[in-house]
Length: 286
Image (cartoon, rainbow, N blue to C red; front, top):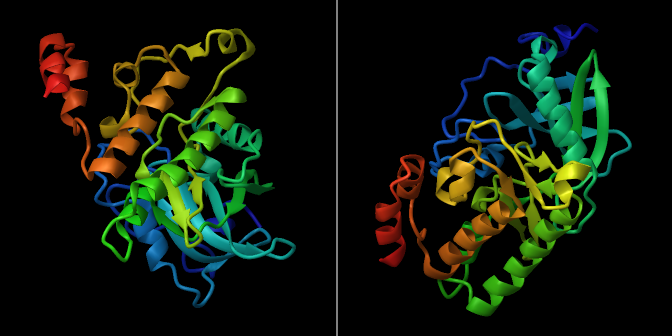
């Protein structure tokens, strides 16, 4: 089977011609911060009906979501218990070296982590020259949706803090291993039916090399990646970032969970990029 056969529409294999829904991040750049459409919305649409085809040994059940570079399927494979989240590059065998390098970086980052609150890597495969990343399938909802789904209308502060402490523990585990997530937001923190959070989507993760690990910073190329409403000012500017950028994102999420609203909204991104220090101070003092 050629790499083109593996994704050929109309041949019993995966159909890549389906329209792409708006707002899909999946670790791709160009996220506008619009949280109206998240990949969890597509997960809810997944049905266990007729399989859509195969990619290698994987039986494709449904498409869970896609971004500009990556697509994730709900799939199953003999030898792996339960369904899996199978990710590959949209471009397949036509992926550029830069796309492949970025996917390799995501695979490397995720494979170095082993924590109960971080989505587990089950297998790394290659089919017709295309790399595949198989992860555990998480049946959960974004942490903000979970926080509001209580019989009393909202989770108690103790419930919120207990779950959020687990999230912080997972992020700390990644930081200890030199991995910065860079896109921490509610859609990437899924809470399952047992109130257990899972940090997902390391598509924008950066790995600190040995030289950078001493001061826990790294230099970017000037291109912003992430979600503006949750990104630290230095990340929006495209400058040097460290683990503090993830800590900032955690703080924004905790504020949102406790108050029901974002502390600054997406307006902070516009102010930061224009370096309007006076306006930023006024916004922070409100």
